[in-house]
Length: 190
View 1 (tube, rainbow, N blue to C red):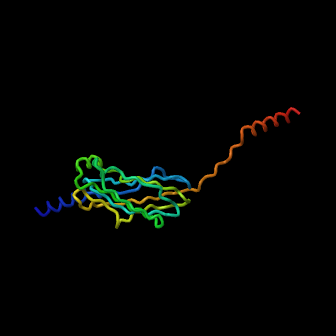
View 2: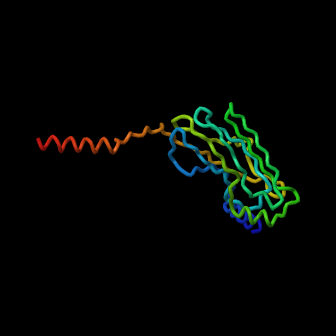
């Protein structure tokens, strides 16, 4: 009887537990060469207060050039957080780490984080047309609870489709249209 109850309880807990999700999101689906793309690196499905995150993101250097990034405020209790970044432009790798101070106020962090929050915002310049992927390296990406325990995390990569830059069709000058109309009227009177 006790064994059956314990097994049922463990099964119920395993179905109710959900891994956190780290993902990249784009404001738009379609881009053209020359556009600036803003991506949000976010985490959701949190069941605990986080103490930090670390990630390694790869992108296609033939399609994008990193312009900059800005960390979110989920690990800042008002006294800052420990932020680290490393960018290898030749390889198309961006490593971002952000950790709460060990003496941070956990209640303030929990209020900042809620069940999910933005870890960082990234800006890229589009260099060429095509289908491109932004991918996480799961071996070098993850999250830690405020108690410094690893949190189970899933990752969602991002695919962007970039179109060639459209060439604007020159509009005829108003004066040319007016002159053409006057010539047409003059020819009709004759």
